[in-house]
Image (cartoon, one colour):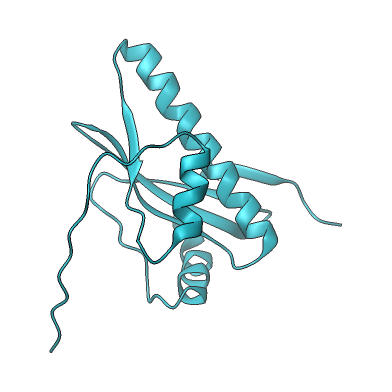
Length: 134
């Protein structure tokens, strides 16, 4: 029987599961910015999605949001998006001021962009990048 999915804080003992998810996407690790907060969707001890979120003067930035490569992982990623939006809304209400929630969407991932537009996000900036090779 499958255990219930829960959104929870990232714990030190989640490192191996985080690495499993990162490697499933061809990465060696996640970038953890100073001051970032981690949230996960777990099913028992198994992580189904990982989010790293940090607060800046302009609002909140999602540094990393990655699902396990599965349908359940995609569902879990949606749970984390819902959790982050509820958190930022609660803080905006408590602080009595507007707060943004933002993240970078790569141009080579139109599905990600379409999903965020459907959730009510709007493009507010362009990120320019330049490749440097050895």
